[in-house]
Amino acid sequence: MPNPHKGEVAFEVEDRVLILVFDWDALAKLKNLLGGGTDWSKRLFAGLQGWDPVLMRSALALGLAARQPALDCAKVESELSLAEAVMLITRALSLALFGDPDLDAALGKQKEGERPTRPAATGSKTPSSPLAGPASTPSNSGG
Image (cartoon, rainbow, N blue to C red; front, top):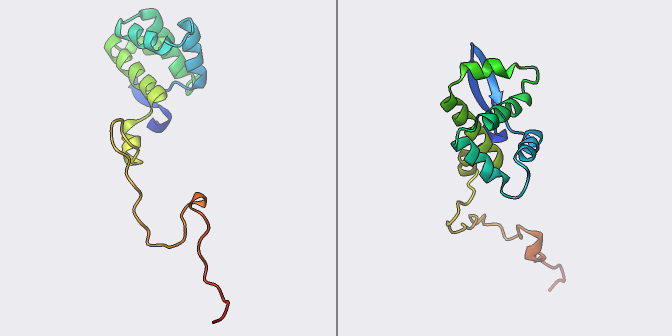
């Protein structure tokens, strides 16, 4: 079963479920393939949009190797259309590089441009943070 929070994308080839994921190793190899630099991810997505077959073949092989190291990628390539391959690779790369927007929404993470929200008041008089200062405690000084 794929874990989208780890960037895993599942697809089926010949009644076998395969997992495509770009882990740290795959991302490092793709960066090296593209010559490094700070704009490597832009060049990666541009190459996929331009349907670069060398890049597509390399990305597919690297993305499959993490979960299926002994897989014959030529067989997978023969079963996927170019459009399917680009879609799967792009989805898995997007999850690896940018995360899962559905997970961010589920966790209540702030979207760009939104105002931060304050946590709901708990009604407790004790500080909720060590930065809030010492809690006042009643004294038994008698009186």
